[in-house]
Length: 224
Image (cartoon, rainbow, N blue to C red):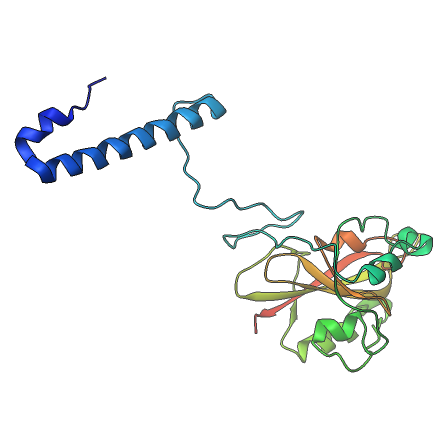
């Protein structure tokens, strides 16, 4: 490896050259330090420079160049304790990580939240067996949503999604429309669980269980 000498540069550049040389040596030394550290960690002779660390959201495909916001588990401690009741834990066995965003209330429910309405209760409606989502299709179409052909839960920049849950009969057919959750801009989801608090949770599967069944359909519109 060649040795960088300030004396050799002095004869060519004078005082200005000496300043440039010192800066150059600092930059070279820093680059070598980064290269050595990265090589020791990866076991390869290459360096990958990451300007920001982007954690991947749990269970969803994220196309936006950032990950989910941290979950603040310190807000509304009394409201959080509602989810520690045995019957609630049994109903939502997968709800391990969540954030309370607003206190419990009877003013609105999950469907109203998915419509952006917070002063009325909107009950989910189940259609006939051959068109079981017909009522929900009309409800969301009036707000600019279209039901997707597939259960696409991934985050799409510029789009807003709502997932509708349904219970399943013992024979495997869909039974009742039960719940709706809204996808947030960071790829996580928010739900108003009946009269319980409004919460944010990592994925739609967080609420999969005996109370709401499972995610059954996704509605999408342009973000507003």
